[in-house]
Image (cartoon, helix red, strand yellow):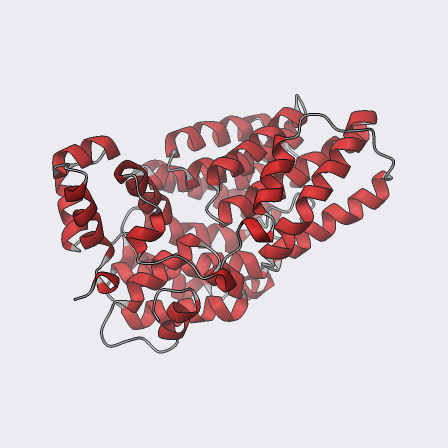
Length: 393
């Protein structure tokens, strides 16, 4: 077996030995057990979350792509040449000139950025955002009250796309900037906290994500939640879903179930109507979260069962392309957990058909492609994806 054909776990073992580390030493630095490391290296436990691969790579002092097998080719990567470096520079600018662009025009640009993101055109989003951030910040410098919401939303979409592309640290920075702009406004702070929760989860900081989102939810809709406006209830529900997923990732199944049950009650009341905050909250989204939570706690059987039920619901196809494709990548992980490579491959190919960039540009999706592609026999469609993202030649 050549180096390019090695499973991720074997690569972890090789680099651990090169770094002169025992399994116990690696486990201690990751905050895991020696048994967990041993199962990863033997392939008993799949590494299907990019954030975990990233954490291991950091401890082993290698690029995550080394553990996955190879780097993405330029045709499949959204990177510095496509605007991430420009977005990083925009976030690093602390002085902006007063702007002259009207709030109405800026609002149209922000709305377009969100729509572009929801259609999963990530390269276009990251190319647009540096100029948009500068323009909205300029307006905010002269008319903060009128531009605060626009700046929070711009930082949110920046955080979302950065997290997608494996730049979770930058995503957290953008989300934190949104929180600072939101100030004492509980609704603006709540929308910003959604981004904070997503970024912290991507950084495997589940406890911090849980605390931040629960606190924000309490501010948005103090109890009893049903007395709040529909929009506030929906935002509160979204924050509690983020908290539930953070709890699941931390292994707290009871807390995750409790929070999802609470959001299900809220979703039943508010339905899936208008979405002024770009949060996509509703009954179907709650059921999708149940699937993802089951994946995070390792209950693949439950996740697959629920997945096959929820995608038959009418509201599924009404969700944005980005949301559906991202969810399907998680659903593929559920099939991997039960050893169904063909089911995982089918779902992943479906995700690629909905939003190609979600599968081909995201490091997290690439980890799932790599896991499926190593199976035998090769799953139809996945071999092509593996070639497109540079995992095979």
